[in-house]
Length: 154
Image (cartoon, rainbow, N blue to C red; front, side, top):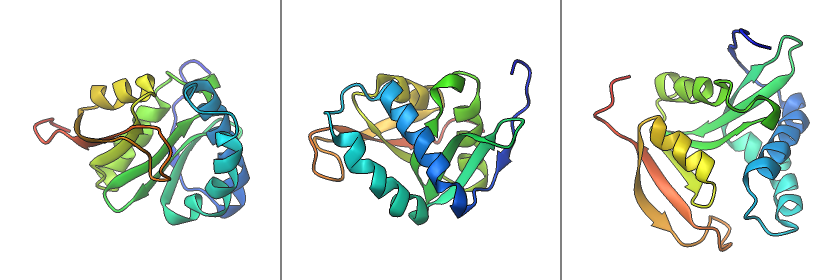
């Protein structure tokens, strides 16, 4: 896979189960703070509700299989998940560049305990503007509300 050039592609609704597989693998690799049962709780919500509420884009491997995806609503990145097998290969950055440049996204919420993601967004020029003690579902997972730093040249 070294030297492979990735490209942004659209997602078909028939691929939602594949995206949920990426979501689950990514969450299991990065969200070690979740309680048992949280993943199973969110899985049907992701599949049956959340994916349909956002503009989706993905990056595919040479066989056309999605490796990571991003979901945007208005000016906010609502989801960004990359399969753990290909984390650190530029897929997340490519998806974020797409969201920022083409979808005009400048906001993201991230679990405070997901240090890898917080660092990723800070590296891309986002800054923390506020914090919530609980997530959108009222669960005790603090959320950092981040916005793109306007002084960064893109």
